[in-house]
Length: 116
Image (cartoon, rainbow, N blue to C red; front, side, top):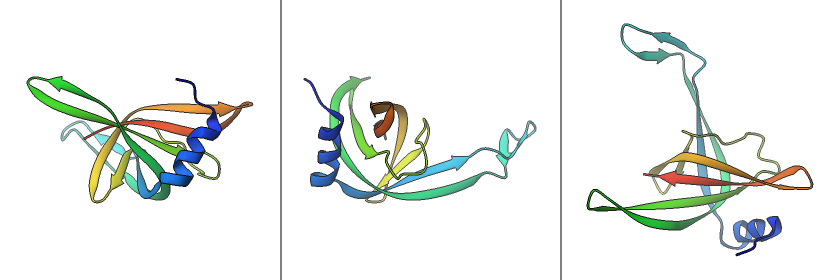
């Protein structure tokens, strides 16, 4: 199936919902004795995104649903990365992979692969 970048933006415009993109900076100090990082900071960004079910995979006799989320890149001001979190209706979904969709060399939107 073929999609143009504008198709993704229309999905967000027509069916998107307000979600939170949570980024945690790990610019703190690592303590090898405890195995923790101190001085991390969490920043929440309110964005409009379109979430959809990608597939159901049987893993160890348990079906695991994977989701995708499309968010616009234009005006976002931050780039999503692996291990960021999408908060939707109080539920945390971890970003496992990010695909950037470009148009004429400019990032237009991101497709986030999510897991519970």
